[in-house]
Length: 211
Image 1 (cartoon, rainbow, N blue to C red):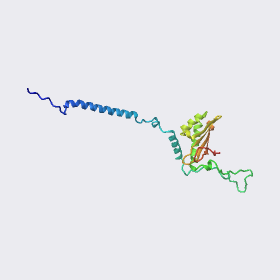
Image 2 (cartoon, helix red, strand yellow):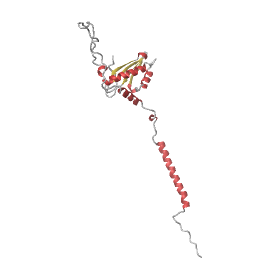
Image 3 (cartoon, helix red, strand yellow):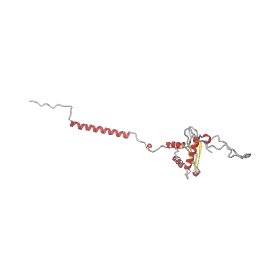
Image 4 (cartoon, rainbow, N blue to C red):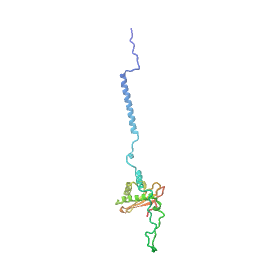
């Protein structure tokens, strides 16, 4: 009796059987890729709220100083008080014995601040006096808020305290080796802001208030 030979196995499979396997493999690859992308999105760096919150306070302060400095040319000179008689006496007359001739200062903002700081100090005084003069009751909190709105940061505001109806403060405006500071008394329409002199380097310490 003649036997029918059994079919031999072959490594070649039918194209109809390979198509489902390839589809499954492709689906698995897409799934893994999607998982990796999701993980990266979750674990990756996120934008900080500070990145979209606008300029930082210290940047606004630097911009304020820069804008004022641009209005003060290097050739600006301090407005020193007169050193001679207030008027010229007619020929033959002599000043009265009790006449006092102004004396040139030897210390203080007039002689210790450079031309740039003197000019900038005048501009800072004007803008701060006008802003604080609008406060009916200048409490330390309100004074700080006004100074912040003008671009002055908390790190540069010192000695903020109230005395009666007046709030006093010091403002450190040193930059580029300068020594400018301001000594302020906020009291509504009677607000006074004067220049003062701070050390060129080191911790802030005010001295030499303008007379």
